[in-house]
Length: 522
Ligand SMILES: [Zn+2]
Image (cartoon, rainbow, N blue to C red; front, side, top):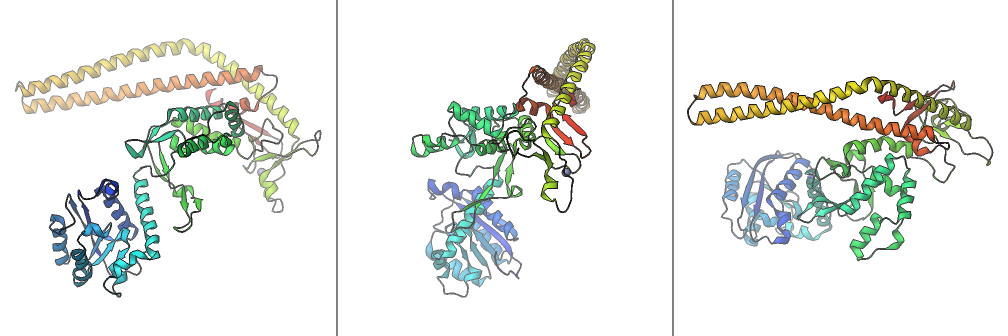
């Protein structure tokens, strides 16, 4: 970016802030911002920093500033041969003084000077006449450079987890006290939560969108048009599958800041392109989550079951659940030619690379396959319930006992911890009152702190395992509900089946392997 640099530069970063900088620009020239912009610039250009010079609270109308003087000294001692500031006014606001520095002092001392956002670089302009740096501002390069500098300053902010996008994600507002921070918009957050719940219930993007539209739930577009024009544009009252999908896959909802997802092609063209996910800038835990991590990742697991299904076509019960057992790719269900004709499955990998014969057909009569799978699933469910019943009657008393014991043990540990803390307090007071010596105090303190650590660890472990049990119990309960519902239904629903089946593998020799979601619980 800086062209050919044969010379080794020792950079002096110079930062200045004073009261004369009015409120509007104050934020953009704050010490932190100048520093992060300049460090970013230095890093991107592989430059070596000798030192950072900061004059906080000094006017630019004269040059009598402590760190500025220190910088001059380091230049004269040959320690610094490149000076970088955010813009020229950081160096000074006195035109003649500043001009003198740039045109005489720096060249005389072989110092290269760069004002990042003013696009001034004395190295590039030194063959031109004396006002070249100021002329540079007027040309197209300036605009290009500014856009680059704005980008790098934005990126620096993004890397700190600060929100810099124009439009907040649905469910969040800009914090009125800090525009780089997000706060929850309760009304929208409820809709986001509902969309995640609906997905967990097994509804497809299309069905979620349809239901929200039917209920007249306000769409993100309606909120934004309200913000912009102060009235709802009713034309945009329809939810789309894509909106639902964007919401369900947005990591912002678990409290992580995900930015740099899109970028402009260049500074002249307004066109925006989607970036590769590996270029996203993600900073964790920057704001309150709307969705807990467990729910979010559960939903991410389910999304593949929902993708690539054509909602308008016939809705097969097992759509999105079938996989080729031999090559691992999906198996799709081909559309019927006529209303009553048969319907067949085919391995996608086979279909795509038919000539290369990378897999085999995996062709099955779909309706027969569905019957076989539903009846196997029914058996698996009945089996599970039987096992569960036996297991539960045997374990029930035991777990009740366990629960009681755990609770008691937790109480004892809580007491112990409090006792040790009290003891620590009292030996400390003894030490203050010189009842015990410093040495005695240290010895007892170490002993007590060790005990405390051990008890605390025990307490944490026990507490974790209790919580884990509670979690598992509630999961078990939900699975049991699904199973009972499934067994009692005459007409099966896809929604329910998605909750019971992880995936179905079909092999060329017609072997079927059903992976159910309740296996972990048996
Ligand atoms: Zn295959």
